[in-house]
Image: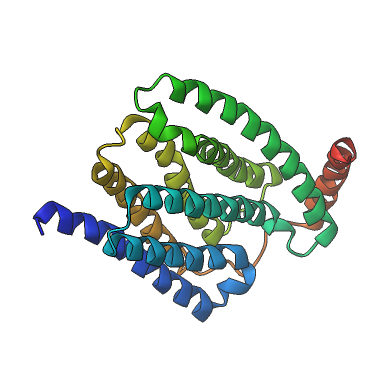
Length: 248
């Protein structure tokens, strides 16, 4: 096995093993109760790695590899949408009604962004010479672009509320932003015949994202909250007004 292949295997295996370390640290610090979806996502990504790695070791046919990859990526997309919702609702963990209003608003905004991203990605991918290899990923990449926009919205949301973002939320958002922000570019501009090159770039970014998560789950959460009652009342009135507009 040559050096490049060994380096590729290291980039692939190392971050997924670190995911377990991140999960263990979350359990030790009790963070899995505050961020259960992110915790579940860590476990899902590790299981996804086990499945893909097993297929690779068994030298399964390439179509089977691609089909499995598509399905598992779709699962990751679903988890990331749920994680964004978890981060948006984090400042309102003490208020279930406010959390429900935020969820309704997020669903409407997400649907709008997905439609725009889907049209844009389909148009751009059709211009590429390797469109045949990429067309099955159009929906996934449209969702990645949408999630990238929503992650920016997480930062703006905390800024709007005047709330200091917790280290864990900041770390989750930063790591996920690296992943969803890089995947569309790599799939679109790296030819499908160079899968190892494409996957190596993706795994390098994923390594950085996991290291970010590893660092921030260890950072001590502030014991006090800057979110006072007056702010909650102001945001509640604003959210209920928007909620009435988006309510079916």
